[in-house]
Image (cartoon, rainbow, N blue to C red; front, side):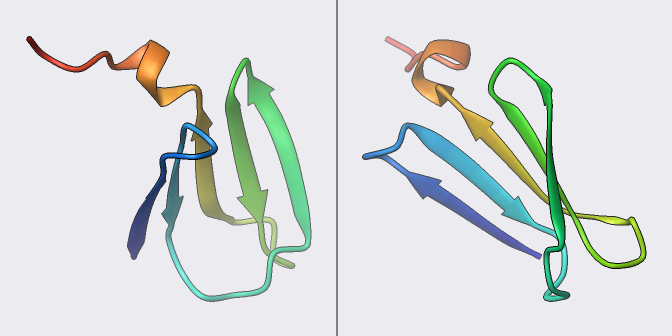
Length: 57
């Protein structure tokens, strides 16, 4: 499992395994799921993270 934050894109990406991504689906505003050939979720992308989780003061 790998977790990445892309500040330039304001996105967080969680990769669950290394299998090839064959399909992606937007399931909610700013939430994209990546699927492998077997239909299993292998990645989750969360966009606009600075708006969803603002920095604590």
